[in-house]
Amino acid sequence: MIRILIAEDEEIIRSGLLYTIDWLSMNAVVVASAATGAEGLEKIKSLQPDIVIADIKMPGMSGLDMIEAAQKAKIDFIPIVLTSYSDFNYAKSAIALRVFDYLLKPVDEAKIKEVVSRAQEQLTKNRIVQKAERAESAGAAPSPFLPPMVSDNPYIAACLRAIEQNYSGHPNIESLAETLKVSASYLSRLFKKQTSMTFLDFLNTYRIQKAVSLLADQKYRVYEVASMTGFSSYKRFYEVFKSYAGFPPTELAKPDGKRKAER
Image (cartoon, rainbow, N blue to C red):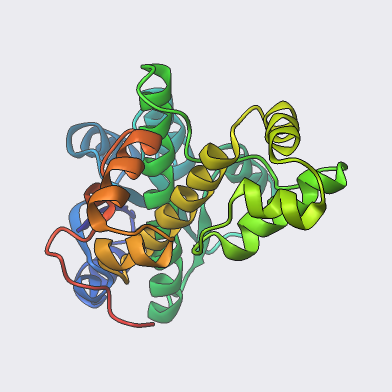
């Protein structure tokens, strides 16, 4: 369940956001509201919400000042700005603070749902990257994310295309070498020199990258993702995923095991 904090000084708008929006349909809950930036900052610090929806301009501490102070306190959340102002100076400040999106007053519920849905996806991606970075810095696993799959070398480019187009199958260096009319040992050495990875490591990393994306969407069960990404069994998928990503695939699955409703 995504936790949301709302900071808005106009009571009628704040109440409307609190009581007329169907947050549960977005798999979200409003954990607190605030009428001032200072109050909002204290609640952000104590409650650690996932998403903060803040009026861009409030008396005293503005919404942007509140967001900046919370970011300086190293609190991880996605900021969304609520405003009726179109002043470019406010927009520039919001861009500098990496504001995720804007909600214009009067608030449109369909727009809120669209923005919150995208923010949830971004939040999931952020957490995946953070976990992978922590695991990599601890020496537990390589990052499950690859650089762009391009190469000027025609042999390597052919290998990368094979992985991209048939990762759910069983591409291997031997069959590729035969197709390219070179020795498997030469192609293996060339691939590792060009990518700093063996062909199998690269293939598995690409598969895990795809699995992360599928699991983050929360439309599929873990065993389904295992099959979709070319693993012969759930057990093998679990072992490889944890080895490469640094955390088990079940951490990205929906807590209750249910699929997200089809969009």
